[in-house]
Length: 201
Length: 313
Image 1: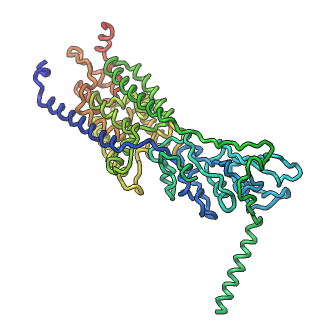
Image 2: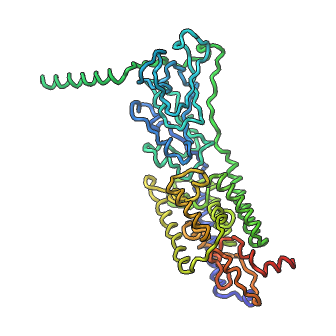
Image 3: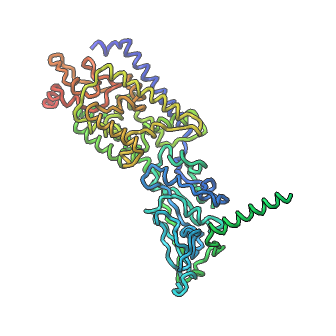
């Protein structure tokens, strides 16, 4: 009971150390709070990504987004912006335009290794001349792994550049250190608050 | 001059022949402008592009509230209720929410690196959620001890639940291995404060259990986590005690804790059942060592004095 009435030297030191601890934590907290920033989301910067960036046509497609993500199916997906899509009959993002042309007048191979793009005739369909129709290309989110082949294929001058790579923010885990960002040789994966796809457009 | 011209001619021929053989199809872009809805006809409407929204920012507030609640509950269950059952229930909830549901992110252990980066690079910013996740468990450590380790931390929770046949680690070995976590903390901070090109978050990279929460990860890390879990059946929480860098911080701060876990001293009995029940070697001379106590409430479970108290109360 004497311990409570007369604090020992040890108790005093402990209280002093504890107070110092609180002060230190307060200091760290204040410094961190001073540098507080909004919680940015990982995004692909279109002007840096070699698969999206104009002028980088003909180079090897970069599939690091597809293979570097910690998720089994990468959080990066190809997105076809329908407002920019030319609805081409022979879409350079859908077909491998260097492959042999079949009897139907279409290239024999598709570009997507996971067959994630569907091609559908739209508008007033001419059944006699399928090559004269408009086609809509929809990317199946569940299949696409963001390898970027179609993005590279559709880019100017071959296509109109309507397909781009995007981080699906509902799937992205917001890792402290995005493993795609580490792998990306062009530093195109950035954590930003602004919507980068809109800024570029 | 003539030689150079010949060389040029040959080069041009080779180039032309390769172009002819590789490009079977001379691709021509069909359109230069996007066809409008009226051009396409047939009542076509341009579909909107699916743009899933990011996780709403109020979920961050939910995470922080849940962390605060879990820390409060963990302190209350262990210090007031002194109940092992309540502790296990909290452990399972936190393992589900912070582990499998939030997939191990954001976590205070990794937040060390964010804090270290921001403290050394003032140009960079840190979200408020990460600040709170980093600081709250440390404040609780000064107040009560390693509350976060017990029941709240998903990495601790997964190990707590596999600890079925606890063995006592010899004290010297325990102490020596315990130094590893301080070394790991120093290395992790060192890598985090490097300039951007060389910066690495090794705590996240070598996190042994986050791969399990995500059901995916590098094979080496998953095997490391699996090995730790198998070891963890016999040796209580090997990661928390010997490797966890955040455990190192909490351990330092809880040395001067205000109200830690206390045993009900009883001179007449002095049975020492709690010492053998503690899988973490945190009871020395019948007193709890706050820097090693992981708030698991096992000691209360075996204590006859606690049982007396419960019966009389």
